[in-house]
Amino acid sequence: MNLHQRGTELINSLKEHVLEVLREHPDADPGGGGIFQEEVARRAGLHNMGTGELDHTCGEMLRLLHKEGLIELVEGAEEDEKRKRWRLTSR
Image (cartoon, rainbow, N blue to C red):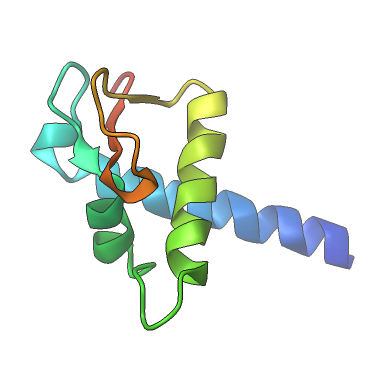
């Protein structure tokens, strides 16, 4: 496996990990109130530990999942990146 393939595999694993966090939280069900990005990061173990890089990684995974149509941003969510609320589009 080359480095590009390994990188793709890592990203896919992270996306699945974030999806698992959303699937286990009742507020992230389709039509639910959603859960804050910072809560997703904390539950996934990608929370801020003195630096923003891990939070940023979680945010990027959420944006990729959104682009793929697997999750959606809850309407009326705050502008602050960490205060955005996300939910699944389907089970």
